[in-house]
Image (cartoon, rainbow over all chains, first blue to last red; front, side):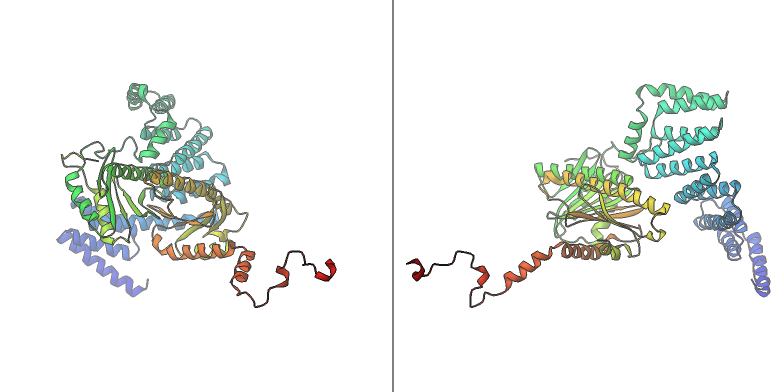
Amino acid sequence: MSFVRRILSGSRLRELRQEVAEAPAPRSYAALAAEHARLGEMVEAERVAREGLDLYPGNSELQRLAERSRALEAEERTRELYRELRDAPRPAVWRELCEILLSSGRLARAEECAQEWFAATGDGNAQLARGQARCERFFIDRRRDDARLALELIEAAEKLLCRDPRPLRIKLSLFSRVGAWKEARRTVGQLLEVEPGDAVLEARFRTLSSLIDTAPTLEQALREVERSGHLVDEERPVQEGPTASGEIRPVLKRLCAEPGVRAAIYVRGSTALVQGPRGATAERTARAVREVVQKSRTAARRLGLGQAGEVSLEGDFGHLLVVPGDLGAAAVWYARSLSDRTRQELSELTALTGDSSQDPEA
Amino acid sequence: MKRILEPLAQIPGVRMALLVAHDGVPVVVKNASENAGEGSPEAALAGETAESLAALAAGWLSELERSVGPLSWGAPQRVVLRAVRGSLVMTHAPGALLLVIVDPRMSPDELRLPMEAAVARMQRLLRPKSESETAARDTTPPGAVPNRTENKGPAPLRADTAL
């Protein structure tokens, strides 16, 4: 930055600081943070944005600025660490890089970095970072293979890092989140050997002991997570609650009235609403859509594509467009091309919450 | 075959293009990051990914066929799966499946034409030469004088030799 520009920006900063002091408002804090960011002072920009957030919690502009400054700071540090790794690779640099990549959600890169680290040093911490990255990936994608690989890596790290509670903590988190209570209890027992007398762990051990009678095996638990897409500790949507058929049926009718549309279907759990076909055909159509949704959700996860958003089939029967949502899935069977508005309506249908007391009907 | 998949793999946003047998065995794999070079760890990883991907996709397709079977629907000719981290587009090719994985920012509809073109090229390539020649011969009009080679039966006896 040139000398003149530095002087100009210095005076601008002074003005903005005075504005913040005299008339504190989200706008003045945001302006000051943005000016710091413009000058490349990301730490200062984040600090100002956080200060503003303390006074005006929930302000979206300040939140955005704080997150953006933090992300840019992390990016800058990542670049520096890569440079350092090229010149003088050592465990401390790898460790910091892995931590930054993990905290910023760049899991694939974190795993690659940990792999390089392990190949170079054979360090147990590298194996642990790999396991952690894979574990995080499992929590996002809910793919059974990811969980198995994560456990393998963590167990390998456990052997290398004797009496280190970190691998056990990660394992415990995985077992607890999938509902494998037997394995979770065993891990808590191991943790208590490492950290005896920990009151929280002891309480957890007692709670888990009461759950193991009906607990599924690890394999069963992982399969269930992959199938349903839900972890045990997640707040489940009102799966068994009443379907909002009062809201859904008019939308289905409207969809079905569109030219070329042969059927509009909404499935949720074991219930379905079908417009178009009647009787046994309606039942078969709903069952087919439900199966397509289930298989596609699992396939998307196993293919490493994450959560399924839309499935479309084309053939001699026409087109079937299915939109799986958190609560249910909506589908349209049509002969001609579908308008964007219809697609949009279908997505909105899956986002509807169950707040009606009307009984769903097949 | 590799040359047929080349244009598909070069489209920006396409991660991988594969030709897969119906039983899930990859026949041809074109990776967008193939510049890594053969024998490199990246290439080995891509190969491994392609194998599992092909098997999973083919398995999923047969599951879909079974799901829609009770409706007397035929096998889906084109299947698209959009997900958070990318999309999978599958279409039937002659004796195989053409499978493309794209980035989430790319619309699978953009691939419709290139994939159809690839399938058409495959069909042209797989059509046996002899078939095309026979087709060409069949279309030529019959000549005024019958062809000698076509006369396969024994030559008729002349009256004087028979006596």
